[in-house]
Length: 105
Image 1 (cartoon, rainbow, N blue to C red):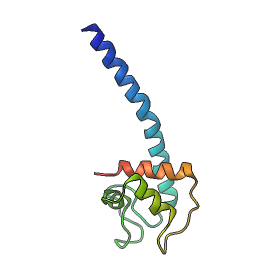
Image 2: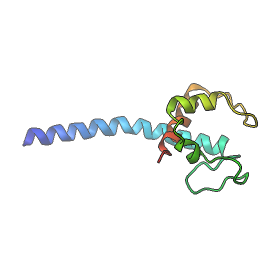
Image 3: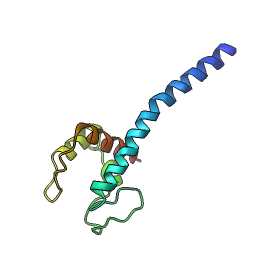
Image 4: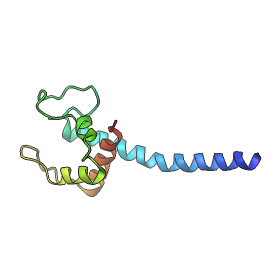
């Protein structure tokens, strides 16, 4: 019984250690979305986009089946017409993808 308790404590500690960097990365992505994306897109669930309803929200984009991490990277690296090319670094791209993946339903 004591062995099981030790194993569970160690496993939960390892899971927390792995999720902390992911949470920090997603939080950085949220900050970047607020800086770059919020000019045109609602960046959080329930938020109203500044440009009206013509622009999809980040939660709506994240909910699309094609919005896998790879799909989001492709979308952000090859912006559509009307979307500025932010020249994202790999770190910024990873952070935005982590944030958007956290928005998936």
